[in-house]
Image 1 (tube, rainbow, N blue to C red):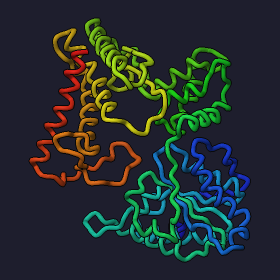
Image 2 (image 1 turned 120 degrees about the vertical axis):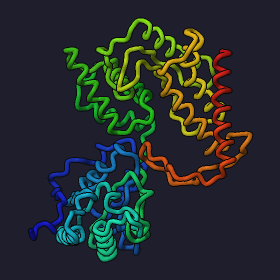
Image 3 (image 1 turned 45 degrees about the horizontal axis):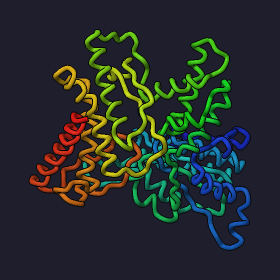
Image 4 (image 1 turned 180 degrees about the vertical axis):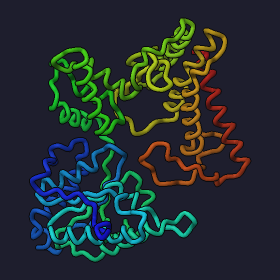
Amino acid sequence: FMRIGKSKAKVYIESDIKTRMNDVAGVDEAKVELMEVVEFLKTPEKFTRIGGRIPKGVLLVGPPGTGKTMLAKAIAGEAGVPFFSISGSEFVEMFVGVGAARVRDLFEQAMAKAPCIIFIDELDALGKARGTGPMMHEEREQTLNQLLVEMDGFDPRVGVIMLAATNRPEILDQALLRAGRFDRQVLVDRPDRPGRAAILAIHAKSIKLAPDVDLDKIAAMTPGMVGADLANVVNEAALLAIRRSRETAEHRDFEEAVERVIAGLEKRNRVLSVEERKRVAHHEVGHALVAMSLPGCDPVQKISIIPRGIAALGYTLQLPVEDRYLLTRSELENRIAVLLGGRMAEELVFGEASTGAADDLQKATTIAKRMVKDYGMSDKLGTVALDESVQPTFLKNMESHATPTYSEHTAQQVDQEVRRLIEEQGNRVREL
């Protein structure tokens, strides 16, 4: 029973850690920031000579799968120091006081092995903002208080560096983020096109490639994908090559692997009737025709009427020419038009729409709502943002569903503007 208060941290000695900074790609800015930590652990006298001090704690923030945990291991591997790794959820137990005891034990072990790195993964499980409401969790808050005390108490000159990772920085307690605790936040973001190509090259070293494989083209096909997705693409390509009894993975294997990751597995056993296949074909061609007719739309790469994933009976694959970080009003309107193209094609050819356009309508409505409420692109409501500003979340489907802070009359105007935007684009598509 006495061992329950012992830290559950996995301890990796220097020779156990094989990961190096060269194994991490696509996050060059984060690597530059974190190499300072490596320098401090290797040559601390260089920093203390002029009176500078290394940050006590470094918080890695970013979407899931971008390589935060891998970066932490790479730092320990480069510096050649012991590495204590623990998840935020492993501190808290059903017994009161156990979490705080584990925090104390973790820091005692780390001090004994200094210089070293303590890494807490999924910090949000432990470091969620404390509250006074009915949902407060006394044991977790006691554990968090102990972590705050320990981070205040240890001397950074000893050589114990705190690293933590989270994809939900907006819910962390502010006391954790103040100077003197996690005083440096490093964003580990989604890689750009050159970054994706570099990540693919690292993962492709482990498989045999055919001469026709162009990793730069694959990188262009995968906008928005993180390192974990790209590793999955490479593995899927290798498995497809094995399934086809080939010795090497070819470019077509990679293209199909990208489709599998984006759209899901093919459902060839989901047999559609002739009438349904015709309707799906016209629906997908409707998307493609609108995309090819309007300026500034992403080029259409492929049209398929083979069912994929959970619900898709077909899909039109558009691949951007380059990574985009800004969109104009006309480009957003064009995106709504492309989404409505399938439904309008069904109405024109068959005289009525089907349930196949449900997902398209959902996406079109979301874009229209954001144009009106977030981007100030409504002539009627003017250049105002109606949703209260919140910190961006790295997780999908994490939008706030709080009560609107505007009047009922404004809410009605928002609904009217959203409907007007979608109807305008629907009429525009019909005329095409």
